[in-house]
Length: 70
Image 1 (cartoon, rainbow, N blue to C red):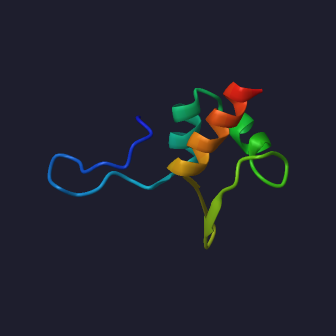
Image 2 (cartoon, rainbow, N blue to C red; image 1 turned 180 degrees about the horizontal axis):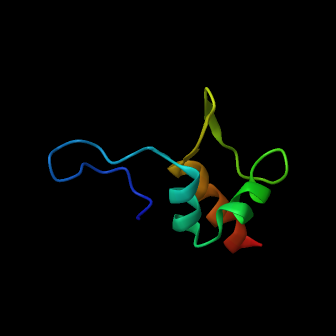
Image 3 (cartoon, rainbow, N blue to C red; image 1 turned 135 degrees about the horizontal axis):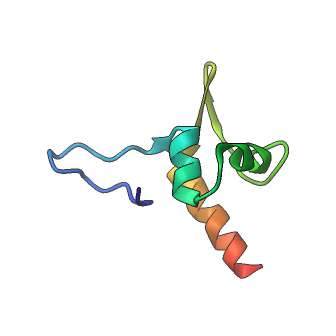
C-alpha cells in the first residue's frame, strides 16, 4: 500500500484512513507494535470513529519523516 491519496482507477479517491492492519502493513510492523506506538503510549495519533480505530495517511507520513530525522 502506498501513502498517497490520489484518485484510483474509477475516479474515486483512495482511502484517507487506514485500518490498524493496513497501517501496520504500510509501516512494515506488527499490529501489536503499531498499538504500542499509538497515542497515549506513543507518538502516532489515531482517529476514533465510534469503536473503530483508524490511522490517517498524513499522520503516518509525519511519523516516518520524524523517524528519519532522528
